[in-house]
Image (tube, rainbow over all chains, first blue to last red; front, side, top):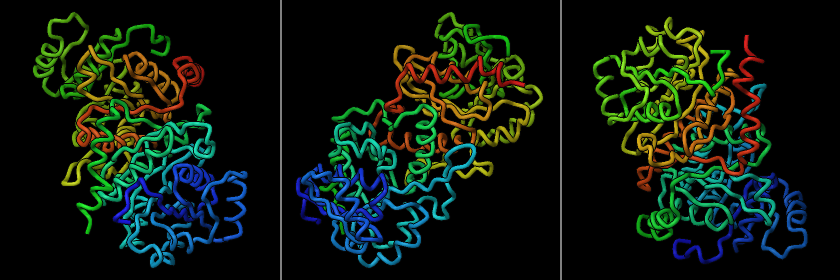
Length: 245
Length: 245
């Protein structure tokens, strides 16, 4: 993958991809030209979800088991519920190896006051993934993209995608992936430890959605697009090659 | 205050108001028609800052000691550094009483990786303030308004002001105050426990500012203004009277 640029098609594996976030990302990433392996514990369920998702559209999305999605992918997305992450990842660590891993998981609870962020011993779901996948290049991103909007290709997603990672090349690649979804803009949100703030902010957005009955996203204001693209391009995938091992 | 509406002028006390955030808020709240008591431990310093801030403009801003700002205000803003809050508030609790208190404090640290949120035993600076001021109606807000923009009345501040509180009337009032600053929009961000997410998100914004060399704010996308105003108006100050004691 080190030699490819994002002009090329990537194979993207979505682990636990049968939920709303997984379906929406599968559709958008396939529309952006990538080949998607939508994974589930149950490969038959994954195949059924893909058939439903495509509605006869001719897009390169395939429903497979999670191990096949992990093994066949250039970039792995984690989109299962937080409760499953610590159980599922250790068994897939060997297949994931040193790939780029995009953790989209929001560790949220819900009580009479609404949504809130769960306590995660490692600080965030993404930092937990990094602990469980010590060789992987972990990136936290896509927390604030509304599943309902992702799933409807007629609509723009209208959110900035805040991307946090300690791996500059992996971050650069995910910033570019974000830019390939109409209405999304990739924004460098800093080191992986900022994942805690990104995941927790989803509780704010979910509460706003309920209160105002919308599918909100968030925009960083005063961030001009030319400057954004120029500074993001310094990270990767060019940065990948410069800073990589 | 219960009988006033925001059409009326409020007396607003800014405790620890001599820093950039305090100066900026003093200017904008005075321009919105309120009377501002800019407080400091050192009343002479406060008076000097006010003279500098006004640059000869005829605005109702007065530099005073923190106790006078607390005693004379209808609404009290906390704008001192986080490190000072636990020392300063207990001595002012009697003067603050059951007033609306707007905590703007961001408990941030900075190391080689950039800004990060400090651990606060109570969860957030605003929840710490609520613990130290048990009678006050504590609201967390204005964390993401760039001081540089607040301080320049020629520019719009261009941020949504996310407002969290367990007191619906106090929240409604602060949402209206936010709407009175050009470029700001008040958005109900839920109960006071969300303050942790609002304060922590400032670390994301500060990092983005440094990385992209901007004065960023944040916008909740897909939140239409008519709906926002209508739903905010249900909270207060009308809501103040309906839900109040």
